Amino acid sequence: MPNRLNAIFKAIADPTRREIFHLLVFASATMSITQIAAHFDITRQGVTKHIRLLKDAGLIDMSKNGRERYCQANIQPLKSIQEWVNYYEEFWDDRLKGLGEYLNKKNK
Image (cartoon, rainbow, N blue to C red; front, side):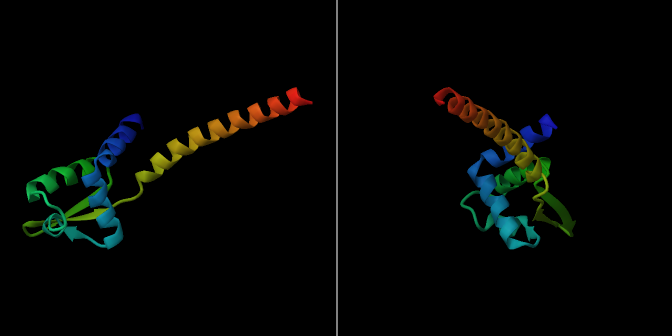
């Protein structure tokens, strides 16, 4: 699980990769790498490198039709990020609740 989280965080750390993922999520359909590259001011090869990292993190599913490769967003891996954040949110909520209770007792 930690390696999976690291791969996801690495993939979404870059603004271009976040934009590519965002584009695919809102397209709600498969897009060719050529179609994706048309939205960016970088080379198709540069876009392909970003897509590879997103794919390695499980955030993009790829298929091939003839010579063209198609990408589709996969939001499932983001659930592990949400679970990770929720753990710490609960942790701090409990700590702050305990602090509030302590301060209320102290002020009485």
